[in-house]
Image 1 (cartoon, rainbow, N blue to C red):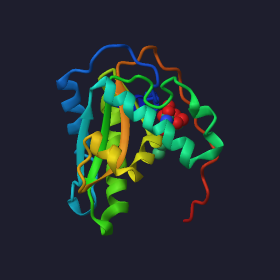
Image 2 (image 1 turned 60 degrees about the vertical axis):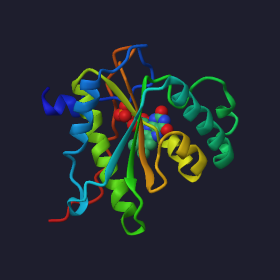
Image 3 (image 1 turned 90 degrees about the vertical axis):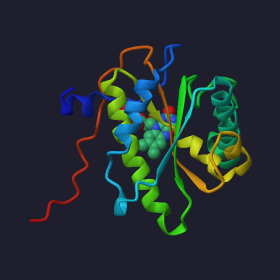
Image 4 (image 1 turned 120 degrees about the vertical axis):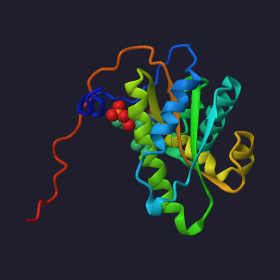
Length: 184
Ligand SMILES: Cc1cc2nc3c(=O)[nH]c(=O)nc-3n(C[C@H](O)[C@H](O)[C@H](O)COP(=O)(O)O)c2cc1C
C-alpha cells in the first residue's frame, strides 16, 4: 500500500466483525511495532495479546469502573452495560515495558511509536485498531493488571484493540491550523 494513503486512510475502528485475527497477521503486526524508533536502542516493549473474550470483557467492565472513580464528569456515561470501552473487539493488545523509573517517559514514547507502526501495518492487512486510552487507567490497579497478564515488573504503556472492521471507514478530518511558527 502506498504510504500516503496508508497514513491518511487509517481510522480508529470501534465496530468489529465476529471473526478471529490470524496468528500470522498478529505476528506481522508485532514485528512492525519492533521497527519503530527506540530511545538508546533499548527496545523496551513487551507485548501481551489477549484473545479471551471473557478477559477482554473483564477489562472493559473494570475500565468503566475506573472511569467512574477517576473521571467524575464522565461517570454517568460509563454506567452503561454496553461495551463502550473495548467495543467487543476480538483482540486486545497491551504494549508494556519493564519498570525503570528513569525510563518511564521514554518507554511510553517508544511504545506509542511502536503502536502507530502496528496501526499502519494492521490497516495495510485490512484490519482495524483503536488506541485504548481509558484502559490505561487500570495502571493504578495492580490486582487487575495481574489478572490480565501484566507482570509485576512491567508497566502497562499502550493498550489497543484489533479486529476485522465491520464496516468500511469513512474519510478522516484534520484541522489545518496547527502551524505555530516557522523560523528561518
Ligand atoms: C492517547 C490516545 C488515547 C485514546 N483513547 C481512546 C479511548 O480510550 N477510546 C477510544 O474509543 N478512542 C481512543 N483514542 C482514539 C481517538 O479518539 C482517535 O484517534 C481520534 O478521534 C482521531 O480519529 P482517527 O484515529 O480515526 O484518526 C485515543 C487516541 C489516542 C492517541
